Length: 134
Image 1: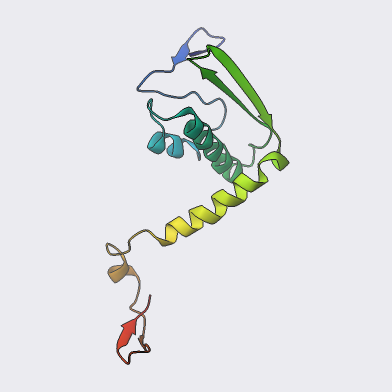
Image 2: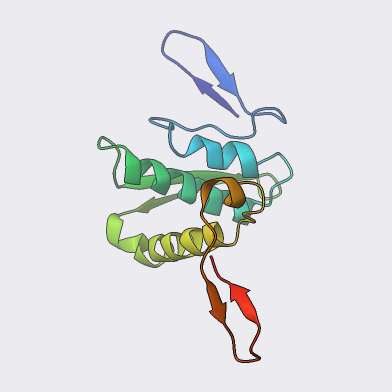
């Protein structure tokens, strides 16, 4: 697959560049760069494309719905296209916001917690022993 610009230069999809994205990508590109590769299943690639778009949409004032996604099935030799408006993807947006926040709380803090966050006061737990809570 190629994206050909009016000037004649092009971008090509291959194992080193497994996606094309048209328009503003500043905030969503890191999602694609970290999680998408040429072995990613199409179902997961579409989800990553949405997350990339939503991250950019949320952070850039000049990006918004609609979102158009185009996929190609090599086995079927067929292009598929979908068009989504803001209200079509409310459930996905809410899921992404909730789970991103929850995931951030699960990142191990061993590396920076001791130098950046003061220790919590001791709290007596049910068995009578002190326990620190962060």
